[in-house]
Length: 441
Image (tube, rainbow, N blue to C red):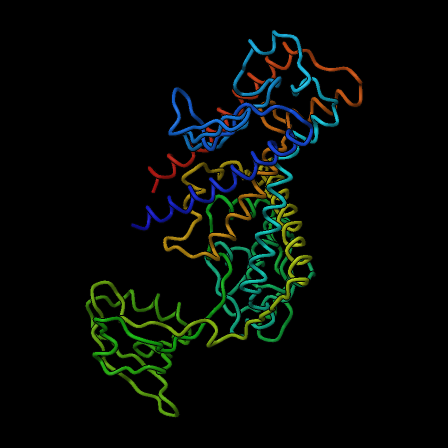
């Protein structure tokens, strides 16, 4: 069922993005009185799921969910309609319009995707506000994985700055390290300021290993509730007990306890808990799965989160700013793809990777956050100067505007074919990575 929910979220998000993108081309073409012959959600080779005609335009739903398209009269695009291009130009055709109008039509899709992202952020800030954990409020210090330990970070360190710059939102620590290719991390270790250097090539290893637990925060283990079959409850533990030890071994934090109890499956253990002012030792039998059936208390019990509420007029500039920052961050991600030291291209994924970023349960806030991100991603990728993408058409239009020489139709046909070959190769590469990772896992 979780897979079905992920697929449904992905398809809904993709549908919204494609319709908005193609509507950008459509409305710009209509403004300049350019005929749009087709407007399709998803591609329709050989047949359509359904279609209808309204005015000069055929609207339809294709069966191949790889995107969508609008077919504009007098334009060399993926339809490769050479017959139309052999006829004399007509006033309503794309090729008959001035270069600046054609440029606006081609930029209409990416413009609408950026606008959509900003509108989503505005709506989200107005509806849910913004909540984050300030880095200064991570009072128990960080927890780190083996990769972080290699460069000198330790459990309990408190992050002060990244490259001597303060990061207000703790959840953006890893983002700041990776996207800005940080060189050092400054931490408070037992009251002493320690500088941890990030070695060359480390960011590449971090991306390749997808080390999602690279830096987290430590959290105490305080009983919030029990599962239906709970060995902890059967042993006599109670809600609000704080677990601080296992078999005489200190386990003040949740991860410490989790790691230690895995060593004692099917064994009886002694769990030390704080109950009010009392310290108690409770004997418990550890089930085969190595869990006592205890839910820890939620994060907001241990940490003070910052919450910001926005009025309508505050949400507008804040949402636009988030979209602007999103564009900047995605451009940084693209830069990493072309960094030979980082080798981020090895982690590029296709539809499986994109689908997996959606949560296994339907959560509207997460859905709209991811849709805004994908809208920005679609805008930037579409504007890359590759023939067959919007950016390829923009590149040739800019050449025409600067040189006042229009590339020939034959050249544009060959460029379109070359661009489609490049896109198919990238599609195969990205989805091939997905398949390889499935077999490795």
